[in-house]
Image (cartoon, rainbow, N blue to C red; front, side, top):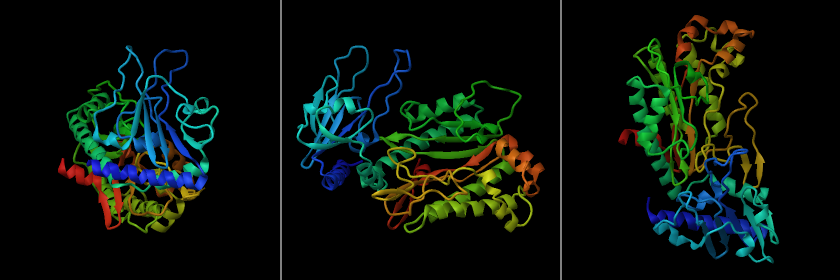
Length: 438
């Protein structure tokens, strides 16, 4: 990362927020970093999760109760550093990037009227911020203003692309360590520990709970149990890992699937991997993400027929919707400050929603593909008992080769996921590039 790219990023954000202020006649925008929360009737704390709009500006570790205040000609950071001997207190880092802010250290949570004139009109972005806005003329989380900002968050600056590449690099180190742990006979718990040891991150700093699934657990799409018992009577048939990392608050989201042997399941993984790479290369400026999703279902049907998992004519099988039994989720989503970055269904800068097709309700992105957007591409093929039972009870049950499906049930399923940047000149598969270089 270069400081010039970060300065350009801040300049871009300042212009963007100035547009919001001009459109809605605000004199300032105030962004609260967030609160530390406690479980019910307990004196411990949940892990702190900072406001993504604060993270949009601030690249370092975020303390709660901090503020960023944006005005037409200034950007100020109110950095919370309490007098506290019970906990580690964040200090203001010695970082050249902070030269972009006017900085003030605060030792206790403070209301906005400390810094903002009561005669000024402002936008406040944050959760449960009403008590900090008394005696001020503000709108809190204005839908129109947030629609504008959310729409533009989909277009990444050079600085954001650098962070996403770095987040991929960190995650790839973890994935390689996890694969080694799997082939060495590790339990889910041990594989997860190997991942975090390699990334130097943990379950609180990672962008989401890792999915570390052995065998049939891979059929549970969001499996996060991490079994620790070693069953010597049970072979390691397969391993699915969906795990990411963060760099400067930006997320990676990568999935790989492995077979424990050079068997038919390994061949199925390779075939899906080939399809995944082709789909990633087709996610170009001018395409529609919805069309890519439908294209995968057509390629999946071919794969199911070629692998003798589905019988009958392709026309009958397609009309039946049988591919949704084996792939019930969406092809992917926008990626950035949040794993499922906002705005995937937004239809314009003013707002509005373009819903996914009725047949594919879990598709998270329906926007046209444009330059400087970042997506995941994550096709899958699963043997999910619940969905297969429904198929077995339907009028389309004759289309499935049930003996062949039974042979694969112990493997759970396959998902392959890369992170791609769509540039004007073509697609940059940052996951594959980082993986090859690591």
